[in-house]
Length: 264
Image (cartoon, rainbow, N blue to C red; front, side):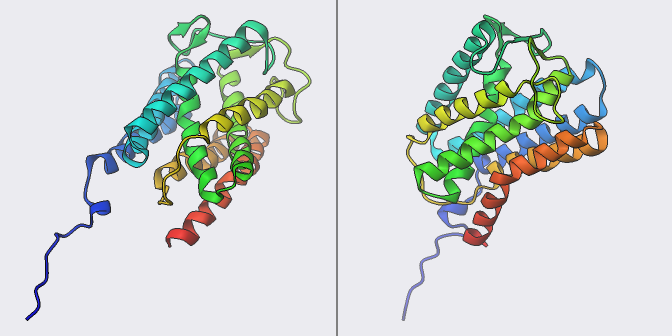
């Protein structure tokens, strides 16, 4: 006679956990803020702008604790927040590396001229981008390429949005990219350099085994598709929509295909 040991309904990695579902609940709130932002007008949008950043960052933070562990997560928060705060401080005081710009009062609390929400926004997108780039390849050069392109392309969405809402202004907005007036080319050159250095640091962090990246994919792809759709149909910015759709697809499409092939 043989015996069978019942180990329960769930395998360990699939056990129900608050940390598995909480990031999705938080990001659902972020999606709600994004929808309300599109429907709102004027200064009413400012609340939703900050809300989008905070809830997206919190969802990524909770997801990372569950998937990367608390030490990895807290270390990444410190690195991203410290690096991007110094980067923004350098930007608003010297114009390096993005060009000369100044933040308005509409983004909340400032520390020496830099709104606190700005480094949080960097974190909210940098970690999903790193995870997606790492899912495509193990080779550092390829990871750096996809991560740098992926995060820089997100700024095709971010900068027109923020400049259009008056959250910051450029002192010398020309020359600009075709169809993106009001934002100097130096801004995107600065993004390429800055994000490359950021991911050069972050990619030194330990890597975990391959796993489904549902939430990072959702965070990035919602910005990708949602940004393109909202600019095309609601904000009357078809050129911005094209930049966002094509640029962010360079990371989103390979990441989606990689996840589909690996975990279908």
